[in-house]
Length: 116
Image 1 (cartoon, helix red, strand yellow):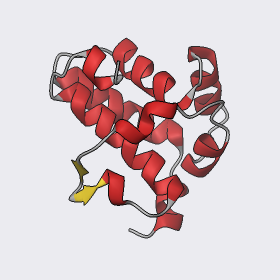
Image 2: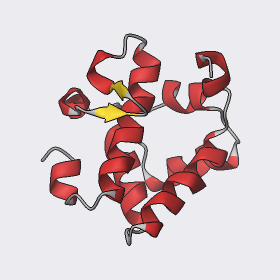
Image 3: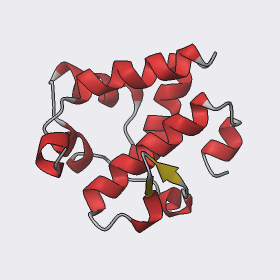
């Protein structure tokens, strides 16, 4: 899938998939929200607003209040791609988010996920 198609996906369509993945592994929607808010700087109301407005991923990422400065500490592989090696900054932000959701679903502690 090319980047244009990826960034055209509505955040409101992706979010339930993140929640479903986490819940299947005995995590909660609140934990998914905490991870997303930590990374993007959205507060819970801002997150809900993004979904209500049906914004695509490009807009969701562009409107992030403040991408977390410790995001660069996120390392590893998502979908066969090493997140720290992704050249496109927008795609790297999306891969960071995917990686955090993966870590949540794998049972990592919130302290480790949030790079505390």
